[in-house]
Length: 258
Image 1 (cartoon, rainbow, N blue to C red):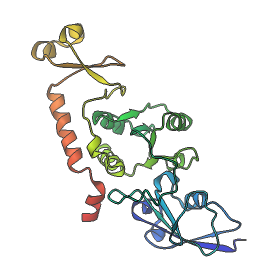
Image 2 (spheres, one colour; image 1 turned 90 degrees about the horizontal axis):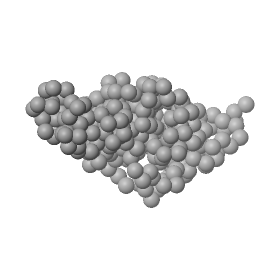
Image 3 (tube, rainbow, N blue to C red; image 1 turned 30 degrees about the horizontal axis):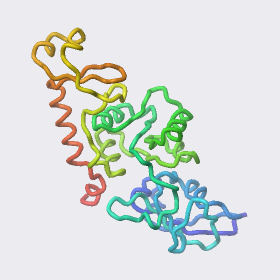
Image 4 (tube, one colour; image 1 turned 120 degrees about the vertical axis):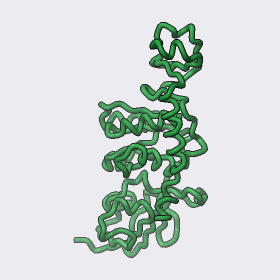
């Protein structure tokens, strides 16, 4: 029998995880004993890597806080324009670099992130255990369409992709992690995630199709898979795509204007 009740209020995009009747309002949570606040948040439906700040009765707490009867809990996502780092008690330290690992549903997003220069691990046969291992061992941010994987205790940094459209997905990621200033287009291989390096035409001439071999002199090669790139019409199209993505990169501001 549940004898205790706490009131939870979730803010901004954390409401994406809640059913209509629980969005943007106080949500009663009934419990017995003293569960951790992390378990309570995930029982309501919000994965813990999506949470940046928890206030209980106006005081910042960590995920190990034990819920008490009558608690009023406010749960916030990442703040893009407000420095709340002195308040946050959820993680020991931020990631020192931006690197991602993506689930099997996000192949097109992986190519777009690589096109923008972000270290992005992806294979279409990754299992959840492999994704979690890469996230933990390589300090990577998990991007997924599966909410369940974000509820794994060892996953500390992650994001549930809302959209099913790849270009909208990459805008979500840029906005969520405030990445506009870190974009470095055409620095990584879209096929394997390796680093691209300029290469002499003479060194790869035998690998070129006739037209680029005749009309182009500037080439780049992946240091890992050795795929060769040049600035043909496909480059112009991709550059336009990059500019379009960055133009609408601030997804939250767009939502606010709707």
